[in-house]
Image (cartoon, rainbow, N blue to C red; front, top):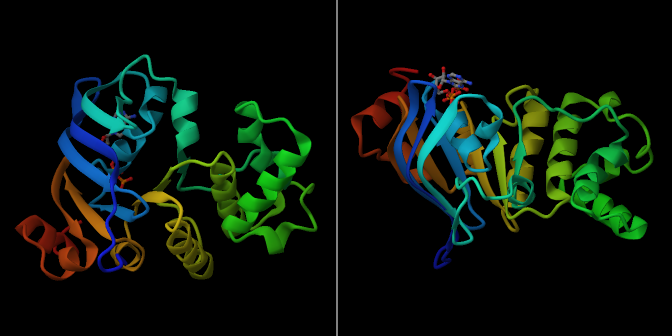
Length: 258
Ligand SMILES: Nc1ncnc2c1ncn2[C@@H]1O[C@H](COP(=O)(O)OP(=O)(O)OP(=O)(O)O)[C@@H](O)[C@H]1O
């Protein structure tokens, strides 16, 4: 949770962001700033636009034909939605972890080293030290240090997800986007991911989509509630869950819908 008297600058800021899949408008004028080195949870019922919004923040929606956005997402003084933005560069700064662990069918080592190669880092000792550091940061090193050259697909689901986090961290992003990173995992693996999120926010800004309100309450400093493509309410997590301002938020967090 936020330490008292600590201030956090805005690192990325969606301004009046709308998103269309063909004729269907999935997001309606979302304005939402994100504080540096904080965890923000995006919550809301299925289909409300949480993942669509998250994917706008590193242009993953570009991969879906027929998508169009309006408005701005400001990162490092630039609107990252502009066509001229280099998305490889952008995704080096804004990494992503998906719902289902998706390691490449390569060794554990090569999975983590992959992004470094894509970004032109080939010096062997530098790659080795970044691989080790990323696996330590992802709380996986002790479990894999003796089998780095074994297939990643031989790891458990929870280990695979931490490997995907290590892969994302290897290129030293500022922001980590997590789309329901624990929803495919058992309770123990889920707890590990939650502990990891709390550790990682010392260095990284984390934006996490979750269906699990207890999880949002446990890991996030700020929570944003989405409903039908709109941002209904955003605020300090504790306050949002105990004294929501909007009726829709209260109905959702008390389980009256969704
Ligand atoms: N590729 C796509 N093409 C067309 N419509 C889409 C596409 N992806 C999402 N949508 C629609 O956009 C809306 C928002 O979907 P999105 O997946 O962002 O919601 P969500 O809140 O993340 O849902 P969930 O919690 O179920 O993952 C939904 O109505 C969905 O059907």
